[in-house]
Length: 73
Image (cartoon, rainbow, N blue to C red; front, side, top):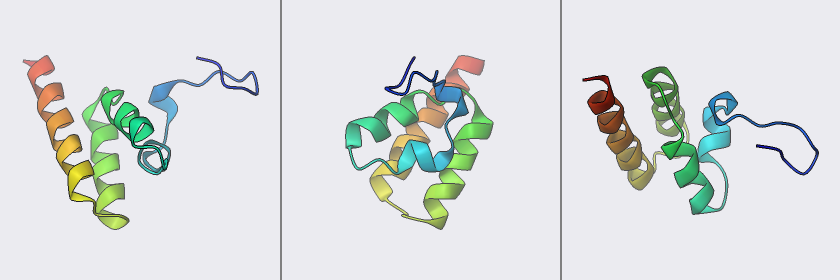
């Protein structure tokens, strides 16, 4: 995916802050949906717990963790 500056952006390269801090909830949802491994998910949970502690976001992260576990089975 290219951004307006012409640089390529890969969702796997996003930091927890980039995934969870946009003011647009659609971008936050997209950041969570594109988490593809437990390491990234754990980093996002840790970031959210240390900063915002938003219950809704933590629930979404919990749901994504369940989805990732189901994929591993």
